[in-house]
Length: 189
Image (tube, rainbow, N blue to C red; front, top):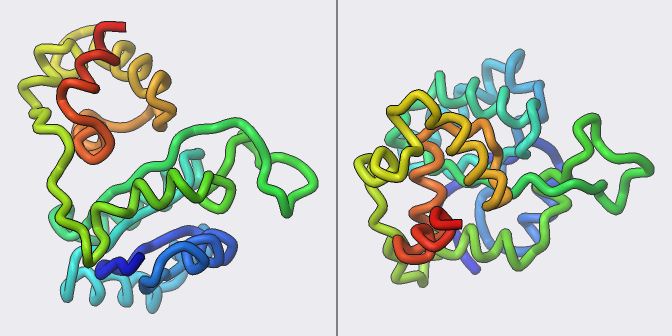
């Protein structure tokens, strides 16, 4: 599968995994190295000026920090935020689980990654699955209310997505992964 947008991941093993699945420009942040590497950040900015970039970091605290840092440097309309599920486990190459005990991009099932990236394939006729809006999130009680954060965390956990996603990030992810009908069934649970 060929992806036209550059894909930004954390480390070399994430890159190796994606290189084995798709034909795309895959660039690493070198983990937290991006915080001290002005050239790397400049490269990401320049890439985002030419085309949108896909941001695919781990669902742990480190991945969240890296994603947040990049989002402060690049205009939001130039970033396609993709999220992997938060699954307990350890990567095959490691002797012990990560600090938080969850899989990173390199450990996620290849079929899931292909499904996540397929909308951005050059031969895809992709249209966003769902037509879920911010108003829908409000009507479901997932934003704008006193208990929205708790409800959102519960739904995100059910979907195996990072529970600390903002309502906007959640909206982007669910519109890629679910139709409105599928999502409403999940909400009813």
